Length: 255
Ligand code: MN
Image (cartoon, rainbow, N blue to C red; front, top):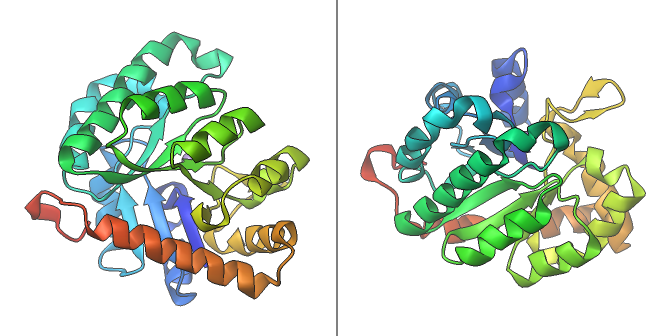
């Protein structure tokens, strides 16, 4: 199973969650919300071979953490995976939107200069803004739009720009989310949870809850669940082989 967007460091007991994910032989992309969280989270993950940790600066935090942006640039040079980055156009974040754009644009440029990256990207209420910046910076690498919630037209544009997608149980529970997933290319989808932020009912999602997303995707594609799961593993293998080809600054070669 694959959870390509989880916030391991934000669970009350990250060590126990990691142990259980490793015991289940899961593949994880552990995204961080601030560049400062990257080092400690990487230490926590240690040498788990199926787990990658990516430096990010969450758009919701850009307003208060703008000063950490140069540190994000520093880490982007050292990691093949980058996230969580992106834009959030929610009304309560209007005041920071210009800063969000500056940070996201800079992150994309850093990815391009570093030699491309796999990026886990947030685009809530800002799909067009995200796609505009991706179109402006076509050499940044592979954008993986996490929990995409734009319009069908924005989805078509994202597909034509080469975006990948990570979808989770919380997204697929709505008819709109399932309709969007239907329009995503099968060979560019991965599962995610966005836990512990994302919940089902009142309970934060755990990485292994991606099995619900696998079942939802299998139903959308009208295939058995194991066929959907195999498709996702092929997709991850493809994405990881692209990431393996990216150059990183030498002192954190594991990333
Ligand atoms: Mn997230």
